Structure formats: C-alpha cells, structure tokens
Image 1 (tube, rainbow, N blue to C red):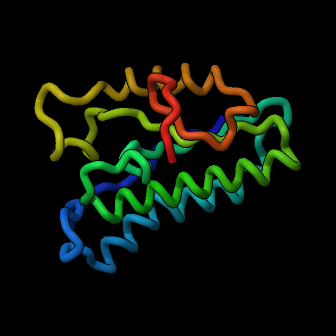
Image 2 (image 1 turned 90 degrees about the vertical axis):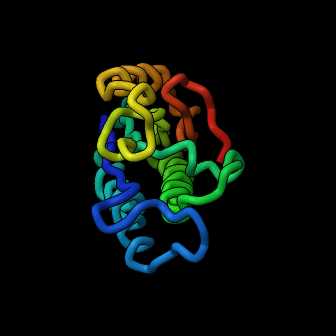
Length: 162
C-alpha cells in the first residue's frame, strides 16, 4: 500500500487565489508541481511495483477538486491541481486494469484536518485530528476492491463526483 499525503495550498509567499486577477504563473507552477506532477511521477514509478494480489495506491485529493461540486469558486490553482490529480488517478486506473487487474488506485478526500495546510482557513473548532483522519481513510481503503479503482471517495466512504 502506498499513500501519498503531500499537498500544498499556500506558502509564506502566496495564499489561494480568490479571483482571476490573483492568478500568477509561479503560484500555479508550484501548486501543480506538488499536487499534480509529483503524484503523477509516483504513479509512473510505483504503480508497477504494487502487489499483484491487491496493491493499493491512494492519493490525497480534496473535495474542492471536484469540478461538479464547485459552488464557491476561487482557489484556482489548488482546485485545478487536484482536479488534474483526479484525472491522473482515473486514467492510470483504466490502464492498470489491463495489466494489474487487482490494483486499486484511489483519490481520497480527508476532510478538513487540523494541519498547517488548513490552519489559516479554519476556526479553532473546525478540523479533525490527523490521527482520526488517517484512521478513517485507512478504513475506506480497506473496504475498496479493484472494482472501486479510479474513483474519488471521502473519509466517510462517500463517492464524490468528478
């Protein structure tokens, strides 16, 4: 089992964009490097190494990466990078189904976790402990079969729309 939990929403140099005028190439590039390009290379190099009986690769995505679920706008680079990650997972799952039919590739939304990623955007009462989020995600992963490969789920095992 491989779980990629790396992700970036903001840095000391930038915050999520609220409007089109906030878009900057450097922020877009950095966000895609971490949230999309890095996971793409993990897929390339590690998917072939997954256990042939039931190998799992899960990538932390985000509900805001759902195109259909986007009701608020904003956060352009983060949303787009997670939507692109979701497409990579879906596409890789289709390919792996041909050569590794027991592989399970998943996009997972952990919810709002108390972390440095979410800290500027949550109140003191919002956010789950990382240990709770990890436990919930492992429960979801353990229930998934190859038929679920290439799908997007929440920590509560709800299927999210692309």
